[in-house]
Length: 149
Image 1: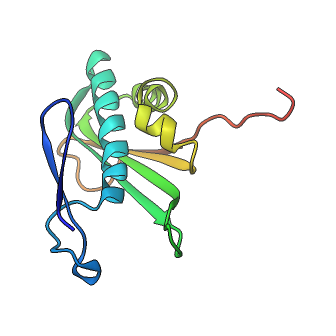
Image 2 (image 1 turned 120 degrees about the vertical axis):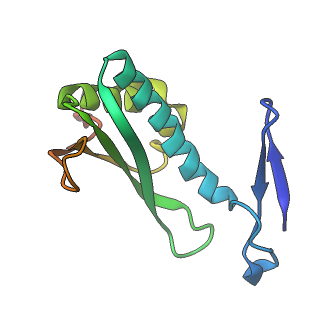
């Protein structure tokens, strides 16, 4: 129950299972990598766009949490991406646009997984040396299709 995944890039990813199913807890669960892929894909998009918009970002983090079905195959039912941006006078409109472009144009992981389950996107902007409370918080959602359009 231990494997090594590889790709064209040549990098290796350890895959493992929990002891209850015969594993040694020695690697990522394959299902975990789907969420890591989602968070990593959108994180790279968003920080790249923010850099192009000359936003002074000093720390950036994307967390993803997902709910799963209780019964097998225990698919994801929904997910939430939390974007936490720290910097100096980071513009909310720039961040929202970066999240939107990632969700609608650039992130293949989000485009694919978003067809399987809803993904909520929340963001928080913190001022550098401004404490533990965000100065701005918000939610971005894909526009809903209007029936008949």
